[in-house]
Structures are given as C-alpha cells and as structure tokens.
Image 1 (tube, rainbow, N blue to C red):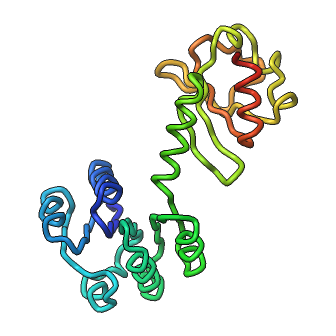
Image 2 (spheres, rainbow, N blue to C red; image 1 turned 30 degrees about the vertical axis):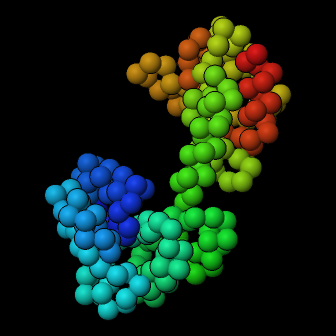
Length: 219
C-alpha cells in the first residue's frame, strides 16, 4: 500500500515536501488557493487542486478523511493555518503536521491538537549558525529546547583513541550513538571501537554538553 499524504500550501516549504514525498513513492494530494502554484504541481503531485482549506465543505468534498497524514504548510497567513488545523482535527484526520511561523503560533497549534509542529526557518537558521561557528559540526537536529543530535567530524586529536579511552559519557554526559565511516555506519559502537580521523560521530545529549565536548576535545 502506498502512503497517502495531503500537502496544504505549495510555497517553498510545502512544495519541497510535496516533491520529496512523491520521489519517495507516496501519493500526494497538493492543495493551494493560488491557481498558478497548483498548475506548477499538477505534473508532480498525484492530484493538485485549488481549494480554500478554511472551508470545511471543501475539505469534506476532497475526501480529506481518507488520508492518513496532512501537512499544513501555509505561509504567512497564521489565521488560515490555525483554522485549517482545527477543521482537520474536527474531521478526524489521523496525523496533522503544521508549519509554525513563531512560538505563539506553535503554542496555539499544539493547544488545538496538531500532532507535530515544525519551525523550518528557525531550525534551518540554527543549523546554519552551528555549521558556521564550528568547522567540526556538520549537521544538527533539535530534539527539544535543550537536547540535540549532532554530527561532529573527528579530528586528529580524537584519532586512535577508543570511546572507552575518551570516557565521553562520564566526562561530558553525551553518547555516541553511531559512527559514519565512508559508506559504512557503525550503530551503537562498542566502547573499544577506535575512532579514526575523518569519522563522523553522531552524538546525542544536551546542547551545553555537546558544545563543551566540541570545544574541549576537538580544539
């Protein structure tokens, strides 16, 4: 069975999600109020329609209840985003992911029952800032306000030492959950696993502890 998604709002964020879902083999119903955007995605999405998603009847007529996951990627119009989410929830959609413009918007979305709230611009800004500040931090994924997963490139200071030698968990309060080595990935590496220069360490922990490790162990 193909997975079925609805993407509401075909701006930069919604459009990129639509394209990626289709590339991954999913069926996607793409919705926007702008006919030009809908035309653009007519040949990409499984179906692309012009509709006002703040109109409950419009959503019912599109059979929105039959889709397992709806992504609300409406851009600047916070009111439309909130109303659309509310209607989707009332119609019994199984999973609703919504793009938030700011923290206030996010709080409202969580209160009305959005299953997942994403901050693409803010999160991308944090990732870019982390990458700019440190040559060692390659990628960053926020888990909560204080905890993250980061990809850190091992330099010559770590090379030749095992995870046990470095005593990373006791000294820094962080865990290496995997090591990327070229095409290979060592998941849950053993304590005796030696680190090589150029290894990409996938680390989980609090932001403060990860940055302390990055400053002390890699400089």
